Amino acid sequence: KVRGCGEGDIKTMLETGNLGGKCADLNALFVGLCRSVGLPARDVYGIRLVPSAFGYKELSGNPASLKGAQHCRSEVYLKGYGWVAMDPADVAKVMRLETADWIKTTTDPVVAPVNKALFGGWEGNWMAYNTAHDVALPKSAGEKLGFFMYPVGENAAGRFDSYAPDDFKYQITAKEITA
Image 1 (cartoon, rainbow, N blue to C red):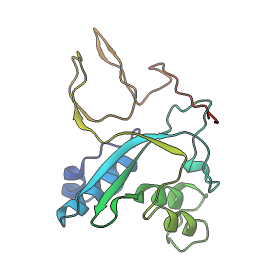
Image 2: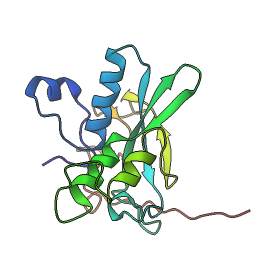
Image 3: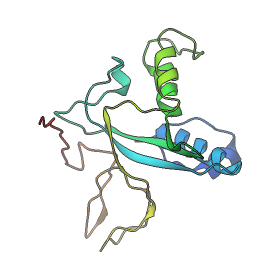
Image 4: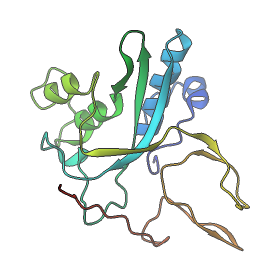
């Protein structure tokens, strides 16, 4: 079972032929494929803050408790346009999890709207944190993080499991501020 948003380890994905996974895996693969043909691309790490405007339960955040709402997306730099948003993982997530049956085509009425909207765009219910890789945390005894998307804590015994928010106690909430 893939924990959290995945590891984003495209070397292992390509060596094993297992091209599935979660958002960090699928977006890392997309970024790697773009880079392999000369397109600048990057992963962008963040969190879903509110429910999906599409109404998808799988693409929503709950502002009262955002534990587990972390999500990775990608951007590709296109000459004449700048950085263009992409999110192949969310289309796959809707296909796999939004209904009881695994939807096999992007033309399905459940998938078509998100497939169209997320090629060249992101849904506005998400906030980016960073694009960092191989992150060395200040004063940390732990290894570098492949990417920084989850809260990280440690004590003398070592690093806490960031993928277990009910064991490693943290709370993330969001509140809309209007002008």
